[in-house]
Image (cartoon, rainbow, N blue to C red):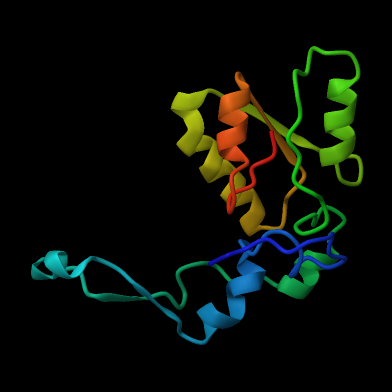
Length: 152
């Protein structure tokens, strides 16, 4: 599931990341069901299927994609190098900024779940112009694995 398409999309619904609410809004609004607990857990009160309609506030996808800061699908994934090396910070900002804006955060391996949650939350509202600063090449390589492609 959730592969990566080649090239930069001109619109927010196509392109690199299928994670936005807009990309899934038609499935959700049509009453899509998502499996919940495994069968062995069915003895508990959790139903086998959870109804997802209305779980998230509605998002006007057409209006969101016209926002000057809707960058989902419009930037390529980026894996940079040592930001202290000459020119590397400038290269990273040039690759990940959108309309003069960039969201920068940092974290170590212990904060990987927090990083992923932040990135997926940003993507859910169409924001892809972020850069995560991490302390090691190995951590960045792990974040950049498909399907997540978290730029660092």
